[in-house]
Length: 309
Image (cartoon, rainbow, N blue to C red; front, side, top):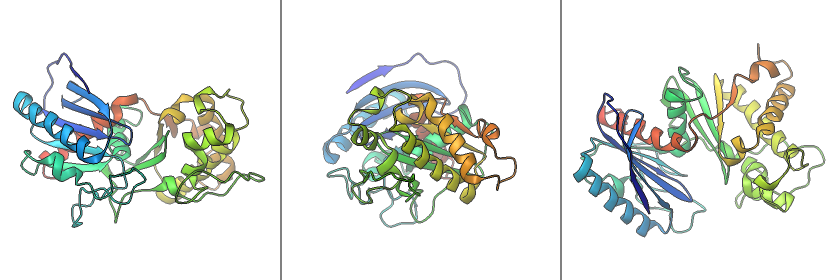
């Protein structure tokens, strides 16, 4: 685990704690507003050991910083609805050993119930809306395209929480004509994640995504699958902005341009004022980079402190 204390600046608001619990790495922070006062990073290992290590870190930070609340931005599927009897627990997940893990209960001990949990992508959406590529936008989607494909939705400035949480990464999309690639999703094969995530690109091209040239033929089906999903998203939830992050999502500048062109073609003029030129301002790269999740976790902590978590 690496830990760092960052130089604070004067900023209003309470000191809060946040945890971005990712499938491969964890970033824990203490912050006030956008200013991060302390940060720790470590790999996501087996559930029991990982949650124990995080619990010790948070206990030390409670002694040192006295954070008023905790926000948890977690990989999923996870029970985010506070009304569920299994609220805060991991659901069926391909991450070995994590199914049923009591994330909110274990990490929230010592915070007096002032704990809020949502998905890591939803937390990133909240952060991008406040400080990043969607400032001032109350209705948006955040999409991460990397090891997996995840969607977080914010409507009216609030995270979308239904029976579960958005899982559009597993949407079955119309395939590019002639594409026979089986896909890599262990549940669905050729769902969006199975066609467009990093492992799918590597399996299709026999090379990692970051090693492929911008004109490699593997990008065409990836762009088409994402365009299918984004067109469906615009039709189903009408977000004002779609913010795209993740190593694949922002690591290939040509990809978003191809996705925008594909979305415009698939919508075929049906939505008013949605053409390729307009989509340049509606489908945009994320601006906060690796801080989107941790900052979003601090916003979740803010909602817990206000009793709105």
